[in-house]
Image (cartoon, rainbow over all chains, first blue to last red; front, side):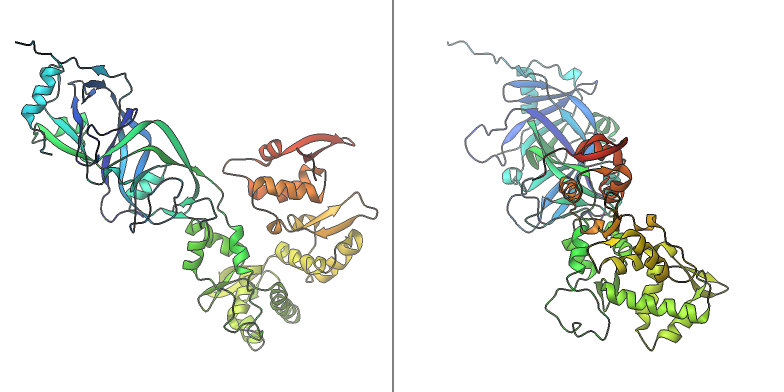
Length: 111
Length: 391
């Protein structure tokens, strides 16, 4: 159902590939990276040893973020039955499609 | 883990050889929130209009039993739901500003810690579809109302359905359900939606027709009050009013309520009453009896029977039989299979009343025929038959 009061506006970040935690262990709490914008408004994402350049896209078809109610099994698209609440709307996405530029870190010389 | 500091962010920028002067002063440090991997959140792509509905505070509902494909319903529309896979990873981030928002910020900071709420490789896609209303009639036909004198109408083992019951069982929006209830002339009796048993319905209609005749009222001006007074001793007043509402157009004249009786609908009901008693009828005999059976002043026409009866012009003599579109399957392919099982070749004129209701928004009968049938010529007339062999 829709919310009482204004719906939150979230942002979608679209990345290529998989999201994996650096340390094997829970994803929760771990850092993804730093998101900057250039003065021209181009989003720049530093993830690990990569720099990703992207663009801000206004979505033609916005998304609603649904949260399954009642601690039921996972809200996957194959099992849509159940009660959901619309938590937020997404009208903007940051699309990172360019191949990441690796960051070459300076390797200190052995003394 | 401790939150990143601005100093750490700047160090990373330096390592990455990015010039801070070319960047906006604010950085978002993205991390995964506590529930990010739980899969509790998912994405639904919105069709035009749905976003505005949600922002206006209205609800969307997902409906469907375990054995049905789920549909999404707004207040007045129904949508099929389908999974769309992307090859990319979609992260949903609550506290994330766009460059415009940052530039408009009156009290800028230089670091924002944003927690990713969830992520997904797929989302639900919507496609507007016809509401699945056949089940509505099926549910109400479980226990048609046969009148107050009927033995059946005691606390029965059959289910009776309130509006809320129907909303949870039917894969359609509320408006579509309420509209369909009106179309099928359902009525609320003691809080439950009921459909009238056809024989009882005809009994009620007959009372009204006889009264119109004996009072010599014009068919276009039948007074509600007098009907209720004269017939109130025979049938419940609510039923008398219901039959007038079903078979007449209500209007007010000089403060009094009247009904203009609907010729086409009454002729159609009389035809159904006649046709349901046999497999088929001799057409000319039927037409004669039919005209004699309708109220004085009404004229019968075969086109009143579209979607109710079919004429077989190939038999000698020509015959007519009952074929109700509402008894046919709801699924497109199944409907066409069923129709081609009844008759191998159809003209467009004959088949149209039996496929009209399948048309999606902006779809034509022609488009349906192109998709589900094969066209050929028979004695100079264009006919349609099945694309596949009928077993």
